[in-house]
Length: 331
Image 1 (tube, one colour):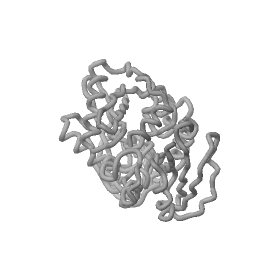
Image 2 (tube, one colour; image 1 turned 60 degrees about the vertical axis):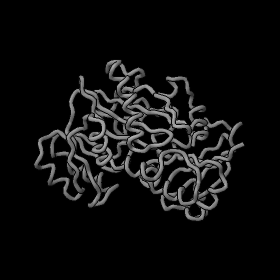
Image 3 (cartoon, one colour; image 1 turned 90 degrees about the vertical axis):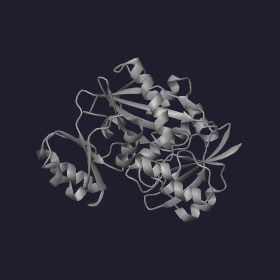
Image 4 (cartoon, helix red, strand yellow; image 1 turned 135 degrees about the vertical axis):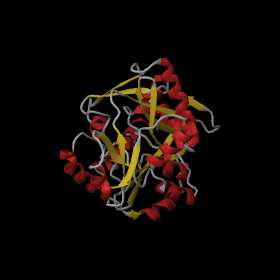
């Protein structure tokens, strides 16, 4: 029986999302095949590692008892580290570098690809130059200069952090009267020198996301694009993602043509290879009539049973339990 440790938490604004993903993994992993432990990392990088029963609930764990550097030594005792982390530290190459240095087998992309994909601006420029697909017109600025730059530009625009996930601090800015509130939220998570993207606002778009799965032998399982129709927000933001019934997801993506669906599935695999991703990834797009705009690639997308890749996998006959096993067996 393989020994699997699920790593979650960490110093990230997506700490709570990480716990949601990890709880879903615990609730669905095949305990007949795997001995399962959890390594929960606190926002201060303290850890607790425990073997768990199938019914374990981790949301109230608080008994951190060892520093992260000491926990790394204990993680060598497991066959696979299954990453349930999101955002800073756990998805941006930092955690991956620690695991690589200790020669710990883990799920998801390596440290280089993780760093690259977390940098939305530079990875999108690479995709555009290599695939000839469009990206929204984008300007990158430091947070300290955001207000000044926005005062020069026609509105509306879309603004978001260059390095973040779960659409935290992502906004459509239609007039400057709402900017002070937006800046306050930015400064709750970022510093003056952090990079912010100002993107053209694309009207009448269809939001689409598409994942792919890569086997250990580098063969791919193509997944169908999923169309996202936000119900509580203007776009697929944090509220739409994590509010119950906050969005409607459609497979097949009926808002775009069959030809566009096929093109996006192929493009997603091409981008996965281009960016050096491993095992699985999910790329996001906007479709406007005949134009497909690439937005970004996520190396550790959500892992609840209602997250996008699990829904796409289910559409091709891979249930959530089997998807988790796929990640473990192909790492």
